[in-house]
Amino acid sequence: MASLHPSGIGEFLREQRRNAQLSLRQLADAAGVSNPYLSQIERGLRKPSAEILQQLAKALRISAETLYVRAGMLDEREREEIEVPAAILADPSITEQQKQALLQIYESFRTQNGTMQQSQPQPGRDSHA
Image (cartoon, rainbow, N blue to C red; front, side, top):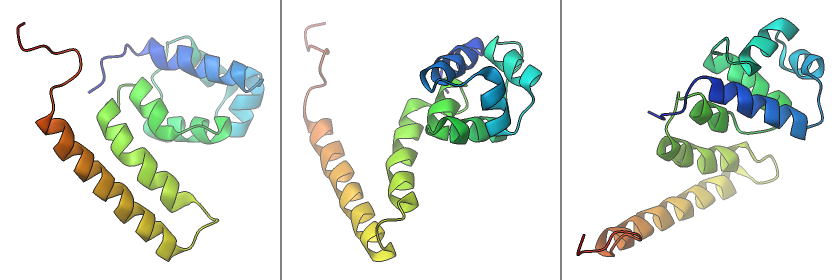
């Protein structure tokens, strides 16, 4: 699991809210949570559930997985494995057949690159350490 401390999610949410130019009350209303509860999350006094994080992500128009990683509910590698396929499946502008084709291509690239990375030295790791 991720090693971020619980207040990290609150700080991150505050930063995202400010970047979106939303007041605390506006975000709370958009996410369907109370203003005091959101304030407590931002100050690191409360740890939000996955459901609340999903509501906040939707209101902020960011990935719920990003918030899960920040909250320590999901590690970075798991997020990467979920995000791209989820974005492809959620795109209303392409057909189901096109989505399946993209998913197959994406997985073939990941498999190919995984094989290539295993046979190459990793950056930052020298053999005479």
